[in-house]
Length: 302
Ligand code: SF4
Image (cartoon, rainbow, N blue to C red; front, side):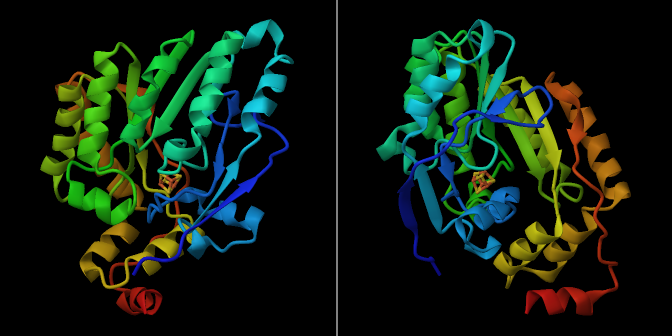
C-alpha cells in the first residue's frame, strides 16, 4: 500500500559538507530524504534530523532551496578555485529523484559550479535517467563523471527493491546517452543482492549490459545489513519467500562474500571492466542468523 508522501521547503546552513568517503572532499545533498524509497537504503538514518523514523524513509523529502546561493558563497573560500578537490552528489539522497524535475536544484548547483569555473572534479551518482537532462551543464565542467546505480538486470527486481526509482533498463539507456555525448560514466553495482551466488548468470547479465552500454568503470559494494537497515528491509519484505529472506541473512558471512567476489573478479576480467577502488566495498561484518534459526526470522517477519 502506498504511504502518503510529503514535500517541504527548508533553508540549509551550508552546501559543501566535508566527508570521509575516500577520494571525496565534499558532498552536496540537495534534499533530505529520498522518494525512491529503496528497501535496503543505508541513508534512512537521516530521519533523525527531521524528526522521522527509519520506517518513514521514502515518505518525505525536504528541499534545501537556498543551496545554490550558499554554494556560490562557499566556492569563493576555496583555494585556487578548488583545484585538486572533488565534490560528490550525493551521499544520503538521490540528486535526480522525481522532484528534481520540478525544483531543478541539482541542475542549479551544477550550474553554479560551472559558472564559477570550479577547478576540481565533480562526481554524480543517481538511479535516474533524469540525469541526462543536464548533459549540457556537465559539459561545461572541467572534470565530471556520472554514475548510475545498477543492482540487477531485471526491471521487476529493481521495481521491488528500489520502489519508486526508474527501472534498471532506463538507467542503462541513460549510460548509453551520457557515453554518446562524451560524458565520463561509471556504474555503481551495489548493493549486491543476495541471490547472485545461486544465480551467477543474472550477475553476468549486469556486467554484460554495462559493457554493452559502453561503461567500463565500476564500483561494487556488498549489501550492508547494519541493524537499522536490516530491520526496515525485513519489515518491507514481509510476505517475501522465507528462503530469500534467509539468503539476505547469510549474505553477511565471510564465505558468502568470498564466493561472490570470486565470481565478480572473473566477470570483471571477461568483460574488460575496471573495478574502481580495486575491491568489492564492504562496510562491516554483521552477525548473521544461523540457517537453523527459523523462529528468529519468523519473529522479525511478523
Ligand atoms: S536512491 Fe539512494 S538515497 Fe535514495 S532511497 Fe535509494 S539508496 Fe537511498
